[in-house]
Image 1 (cartoon, rainbow, N blue to C red):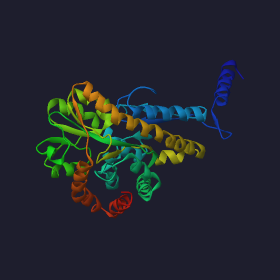
Image 2: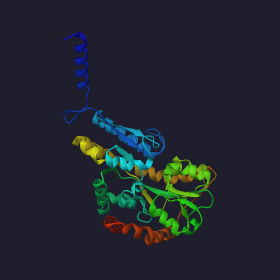
Image 3: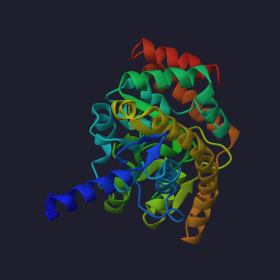
Image 4: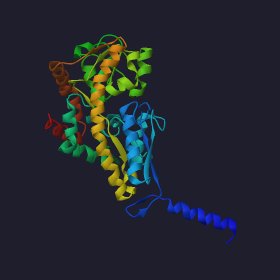
Length: 340
């Protein structure tokens, strides 16, 4: 064997020895790509959804001995926001943390993830995971090629350039971003004009006057600095009539191609991230009010009576429309009503 070939063989052998070992088997390191639309940060600073993805990636690498890791692509830097769900279904994207209702055009059943009035507390939302409704929703997603990894709920608030939207009648004549088809139906019934766009485009729309108000999570209200363009805030702290389901998900085809121990690790770490997400979401519900008040704005809260008004509109509009979509939607709504 000549000197150059000997060096090549020795190099290949050294590389093989360096492969991480899981379950007494050696695998080439797998690096998952995680896409999301939110501002990037670090493990300890920034939007908690970005931090969750980074913590998830770090734990995978640590516990797998380097055999499994992930790279996080914030700010829709890997692909456009609304393309993420479809890309996971096709196996073109490994993972994403995205509002599930964004996929409602492809899979009508997932609109339950931002259905006004069906979830009114974090405890109720997180209870879905172990309830019939959670299994039904997970089954629909699995059939469409996507698996739930972390269950994440966030309370919704409303940022307004002019008057605050607290009571349904406050929305009359305003141009509002609702965030889902169902939320838009409720707003229209209340007399608003609606505009559909991802949360990372709200700032520009409000800055130009294309939007008067926008509904989004407390965390997005902070991360996208909406206090700079809107001085009225209706918070989601204490009580609100809508919550957003914004899970961390993985492509089923990618997941099923991984070794069983890596599959188990992904699901174990994903479940562990849920407490972090819950605590962070609740903290942001409080923090967003402070952010607005510091910027010279005003924060308003909702009463139980106000929540009931919005719920009543939702029952007669969005809920009926959703249930009429198909048998799957009707079944999911019935299962939701068991949790109320």
